[in-house]
Image (cartoon, rainbow, N blue to C red; front, side):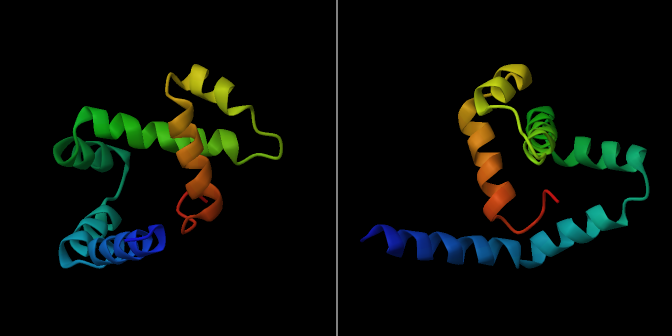
Length: 102
């Protein structure tokens, strides 16, 4: 199996997950939340504290990268107490993703 075959399989699996009934129900539940307090309670029940921290951190990294002159990845990683791999991953999805960080 070559790299492109693996990418095609991964894209298919991702599409199946994002378009599944369960995932659509999750998205609808998030859209139904009315304020920060409801969001806080929902995410605390649905996610671990670590998952909430990671998602929050990725949004902060995206904000730091999505400026005209972003700081170097190493600086962002050090200040955010994360790895440069995480900063690089956020940068990739910020530039080549589906626009979710916008």
